[in-house]
Length: 430
Image 1 (cartoon, rainbow, N blue to C red):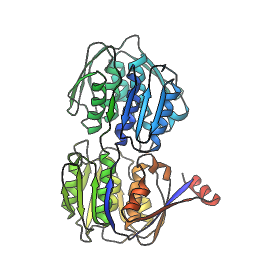
Image 2: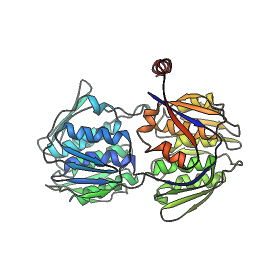
Image 3: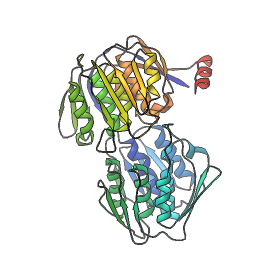
Image 4: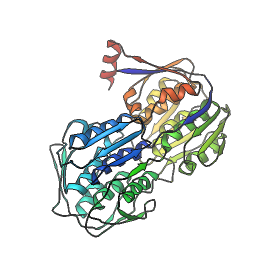
């Protein structure tokens, strides 16, 4: 096990390139199952989730080749191998294997997914969609069993806006007979990215990015080549780091339109930002940031994935801020760790009250999930002294070459291996 150490107080300057979107990659790789020939995906982020999904494709008979940021998927010999345990338990996005395998083979056995513990995240809307398409779905001994004689298009209304359910139903419906209409669909850019890949394979999809998606099923999908969109959450994380400690930072290879909600909040706080076609330029760390209130919402609202790192920045703002997460009710596990560093934050239900303007102090803290890790990294950049972060494996799930990118901006950051005593302390606190 490793820990990440950050010596705070160093100003950031330079250009940071943003990798491909993690939340696209974890859906696009399973989507490769649906093709009858080779699929090539470019601009993949260098994160652990990508490797796990590639291994899952190998488990069901596929062949994969990962070369730098390019994954080549050969699906010709894939079969409906049950995946009740093992790697499928390591990440939540393994549930996309359900939709892809159901669409391709009309059956699947997938263990209930793992990933970050953010409170109850039921997959009832996924199952509702599969059943509407004609699948029989049962839960047996911690695995989901899906079986269909035939998949038939249907009109499906999602009771809650869900990115995962929208994509999973798309994956299952592209080869179903007839038309599928998904109403109250999620609008995230990653859904458009998945629809683009499927369309390049020969699927007939209209309305991706709106709240109504129409899919006319086809019998065959062919291979194609696709480049993933930039990761708006990684970009947002570096924007927050630059707002906290940047002298002058350019965030490169992004789609600024995808970050408008964050950009608006940073400007409201007093951060100077310029945007052009594929970059955001953040001028000088501002010690007079203004407190703001923020509420997470489905896209195009403020992303829940940026709530935790944004909370860290608010500890620097003068005055009191209120952060409300309407998406996940357990997404405040980073608050206790920020308090260890001297933050004045109180949690009440789905909201956190941040009394800012106090300099953080380096401390030993633990990342309980991916975005909590990002929050602690930003806190460490701002803090006096050295911050030690354990739970680094969570950060590695979603941030590609994080230390290298921070070092290139002037941060002092490094990794060390935990000694035996530290490992035991981490395990006992998990």
